[in-house]
Length: 449
Image (cartoon, rainbow, N blue to C red; front, top):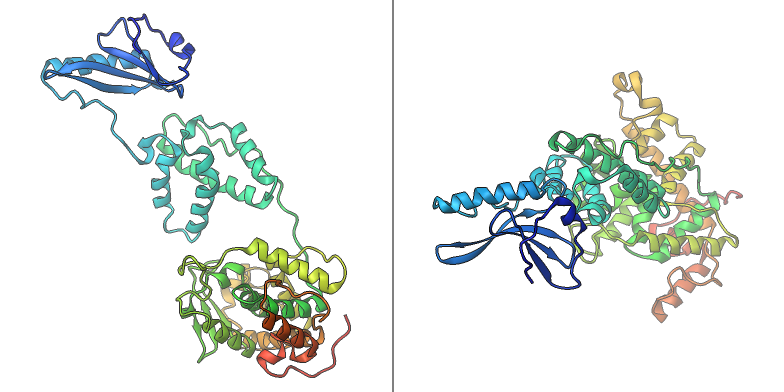
């Protein structure tokens, strides 16, 4: 529907109501052929209707906004009319699709920002944060229009469920603004700088008790692949979750019994050599038989990535632990296994600097001036420490078998599997995943809890 020519003003344009459906066009009384089209969505677009070479053309002039008002539209329309009268291209002034900083929106700038960060070891995490959190919420907004109050509400909504993730999202968003600031003339400051920030999480100190370590070892035997073997690998080596779940098979050498975590996958950017104890070698050989993928633990849908489903798995393992202990146990995470390994090594008499070398910590005894001049890598000491710890874990699994009268870790089992699990539980030291899988363990009497 087209109205009669109207003396348009910016105030009138801002006050126009969107039609219930379709769109309406309002003729400008000043510039011939200039019209304002208002859609049901509320979008206001200037266009120029002009006969060119005998054919009526609709030439888009631009979207009405604070940056492109009525005077800008009239000026541009006059230029296009002048070009048409001179025989020029009527579309040479029409906005063309752009990308990068010129695209205006955060989503349009994302490809350039990603390219600028492509060489970062954290690029996968940057992509995950943007694709999962930032782009769905702010992707179609211009960065300079997003306020710190909006960002605060956005971060607060994430913090309700995952405070640590909320701080990570705010950090990634702030890094984007630091990159965008010199590229956007209208962006005067980084709105993330003064946005509300969730308090830092309290330092965790959860360490699994001796009995819990033995029970967990047996629970993981019933959990099965991929999480059962993978978390056993975490428990035996003390390495980080992503270093295990994103590992490639090419990193492992059975002949030298060595796992080389490349610098590109190590958190501190330093390549890490992890000696493989005999239980770890046997565990890896078992994983090898599950598939022939290049990844040590590939997901079902994508052989190039590790498995997903950590939340459900951890809930199942914690529930099984509570059932076996007979009381509510303190909450624990996969990262707490790393602290448990460190504590266990100290209990076995391993020196602190060797424990830090096992964990690939560049801190404490290996930080500062000591780290500069002390270049010993403690490789043989690490091998002895991990051999002793693996022996200890297997022994604890023997000392703390699962109660055969309690339900299995995973309920969806075939009848034959259920029978074999029951027999294994009743066998004490012959329990699946403990000494029956790796050979006889140290026969020293079990230490009291």
